[in-house]
Image 1 (cartoon, rainbow, N blue to C red):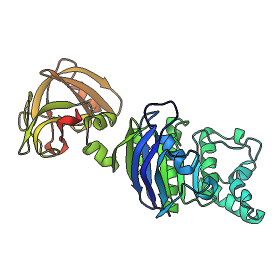
Image 2 (image 1 turned 135 degrees about the horizontal axis):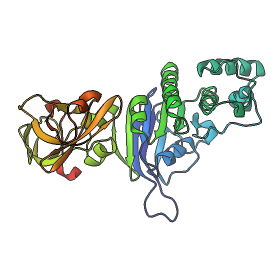
Image 3 (image 1 turned 90 degrees about the vertical axis):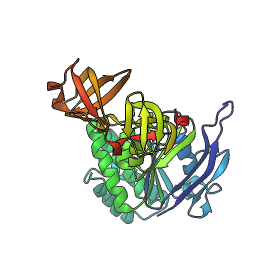
Image 4 (image 1 turned 60 degrees about the horizontal axis):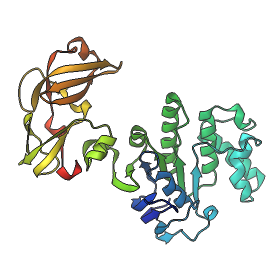
Length: 349
């Protein structure tokens, strides 16, 4: 297993004013699974290619353990990258594709055959060794690409948007398989994604990159529960923001005073609460506001409401059958649980 250190990593492309990635520093624990999360063009894949040795950094360093790898050839780094478009050899059988890395290392054929069988079992595709890539589904091809990467027992596994080409059902299936294999092998894994849910479900920690810079490096729960800026809260689906002032765990706003002990301790700030954390109240009380349902959408497993409270439109995700009681125009009371409120600093606006 490999501890990965990224220190002040920067990449500037000729002719571009802004760096593709600017001063990125991360410590990725040995055996952990970390997501590089962000929108297209934020520098995620550039970072991964620098780790793999496919791009040279403008400045900064990359270390495996306590040793810099910048002067080590890509094929000798022990980092294997799985691309989103699989890159399987169409003229080779599945067994030949999976065993290719061992063949290049001049491993004997008997050992290659045995290891290929083990890898196909690992990715739950036994018996498909004689087929060609075109005979497999997209999900199966992605598993073969993963098996080909793992067969060489890399120190570091790099996955570039591994689920982006799969439909919803296959994404769930492949997501579970990647996590299962990663935990079983204990291999340090870094994967690129633009999908917040995918990052939260798969990873031990998330590195959120926006505008080429690291914004927050934390556990998935912290991004939902305690984002450090409004932009980060926005990226993770936060839509309810209320300006005001915080003092002694009490947040005073245009909608009244809320018991809000989490976040900044004093001064002007922005109160936020996720739509799924708001509850429908039966009566008045602490942290309860009254509003009117402006619109509602039935999604099957839940309902989404937009509730007008004075000059603010509050988004609520709640039980599916709520719309039987609260249709458009209905008056409704909303409870903001104090332990779900988070108060951001004003500069995060």
